[in-house]
Image (tube, rainbow, N blue to C red):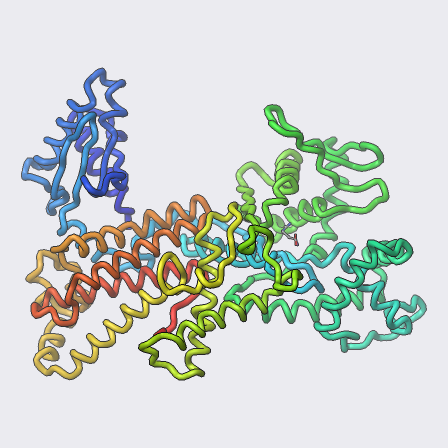
Length: 629
Ligand code: ARG
């Protein structure tokens, strides 16, 4: 299905063309003066120079043309009315209002489509989204929260828009942190077979630690390494030995990864975040030697102060972009080497058209270096899109990175619990509470997740934001719970409507009559729903009904934008506007008690479509709505 603005631009473009102007001047946008019109075209002003004419003169000509219609039969296009109002306004705007019949017909088209009016690409692309990025054996903390939340949404958006998308968690399972843990385990249990070079038997199946123990080991070891030089050196040696493929340490490493991944899976499931593959940095290591060798042989890499580097500075850089280091003077490879090798691995395995990375915006330099290096050395062909979404920090109310009350790094689990509790309190305190405690707990889990995710996603990713539980969990305003509340409200109306129809025999007759045949829907100007037994969405009669319809018709545009810019916050803005439009309509319209059957059914179809669009929107953001709240 074509997006609404494209349909309108084409029609206005044709009017420009038949007045003798370039059709491309007919581009229509949503009005920035909603008090005057719904859509506007600024093409007359753009064309004025080229045609040496006053913009208003062009606008007037086009206005006349649009009013006459292509066949001279009024505001028509082929068989249907398009415009309700067309006005040329100084200095050369063309202000447009859509005909309600045209709009209702467009929405009927949307209801027939699974993708609700989004235009699908002719060829789908293969896209890898690299997000989550947790580090093995370190507890998942809120620093990783944004990567998971934003990445999950970006993945869903790309997939919804018709692409083959692979979400990869890209575990941090390789660096010094592994050596630190192994060294700490060794000191505590030196007799374990993993540390005995002469041991040739099988290693135990059971890990020598639980996740709880593992999580305690890392922070202690990491602090100690900063103070205790000998320990630090040993940890480095252990890391080196492990990276050289030591049999015992590799077996121990498997336990660390296994125990850690099990815990990570649980946490991500709780967040409604789901990865297609669980590759780690370690999986890219086998690709390093050949890659480095090629870069050297082809003359891209050169020695600099003992290290092997690739220059990536470019003319016109406004700040210094240091060379990308492949191998340090001591022979060690780095984070960037791993990321480059991961590109090789991904291209070999998936032949992707795009790679999208999510990481803290402080990693921007790293990704600039990696992307430039992979382009320059031909690792990634020019056709492969490389995108980095750098996100800002989640701050506490004091404007500093969010911490627990005692000042420590907040664990994700606790954070989720806090927000669930805030929602739970709100439900229990509500005057017209209709839920028992157990049900309220379940609902609080669903709503709490929405509060958390929406609170994050409604900000542009690159911005820092303030984590404010009370605000995020509020049922009013621009929040996740408000969106859910609106969906629940629609569900309840639809349920009541169904119940009403079940008990009213007169309604039954009519309901049967319309199934599968044009029936009473054909009495409307619209007969688009004749084929599916669903009553048609009717032409809007009030301002709030039209507003709701206009908002719904813009879903395709919103998705196009969110996809092109990889920007979930565009979807948040949209679902918020849509929820407002639904509630405005609800407050001004008697839906269930509307005496005119066709009108009532039209309302039901309209809010049914609104429900579908809202539910699709929140699914793309990565959360769901409860049955009641
Ligand atoms: N593990 C990294 C961190 O915690 C994030 C990984 C991001 N992805 C990547 N391909 N570098 O900072």
